[in-house]
Image (cartoon, rainbow, N blue to C red; front, side, top):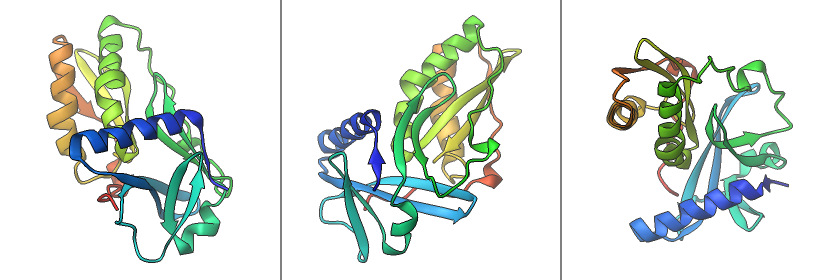
Length: 204
């Protein structure tokens, strides 16, 4: 049985309401897909507009949210837990699956010493402006280090390996950080995008 934590449910409700208010779209539920193979499995979450389910999908209800998936993935995903993580290292949805043994790579990176005024200011931008947006795609952006007026960030979850990552970084992340923290002269992406897959799916 799929589990959606209360924190994840609250975040999903907020994002669904935003879709309704801003784009006039009624969301029927959440679609979960998987890429890769054990143990290197990646999950993607996308909203399903009302009346736009995929032929052959199955659905279950978890904490009041209808979750759609391909029939062939039903057994593999039946015991997953969807949570929403928000801390100094990352912000975004996290999928835990007891059928996949976690590896050290799945754990949040141990951050550098990020207690300088510049680092704290950059982290605030990520927490309040950037990550709430990319979280809707199942992604998160972590601050790895701030050194010599350069902020080093890492894209994870739905942002890793995405074809739009460069656009997101240049037009969103870099602009927001430089505007809020003038001391930062550059923002560098240290993500291993070759290790990710394109996680973005059109609604439905």
